[in-house]
Amino acid sequence: MKIAAMIARYLLGLLFLVFGSNMFLHFIPMGPMPPGVAGQFSAALFAAHYFNVVGAIMVVSSILLLINRYVPLGLILLAPILVGILFVHILFAPGLPMALIVAALWILTAWPVRSAFSGLLQARVQS
Image 1 (tube, rainbow, N blue to C red):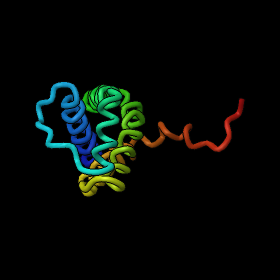
Image 2 (spheres, helix red, strand yellow):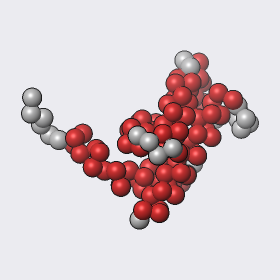
Image 3 (cartoon, rainbow, N blue to C red):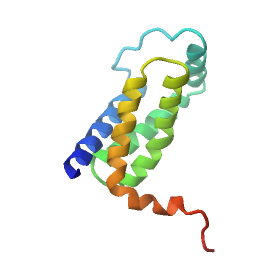
């Protein structure tokens, strides 16, 4: 399990590093905007420079995963981005299998460090 978690962490880090960097450097050619609501949604996010913020978070968190420092923080930063990716692919655009693979990589990476998230899962906190 340790080896699988390490491989998942590196794959997740590389994946988000490449696609996060692409939001700034544009080295992967983008096709035309998807038709319909998915295109309108993408255009709105692009016009609001939302993709720049998401790209920066992806790059920073992927570097944390790749250097094996503050891995729980990197995972927490990637979680809302991953949820957004899943919902976009579920509701708007095809490509759900790849989104599910990325979600599985996130789970494999998060499982060994799950104790770091225990404080987040408390119903009540003593003040």
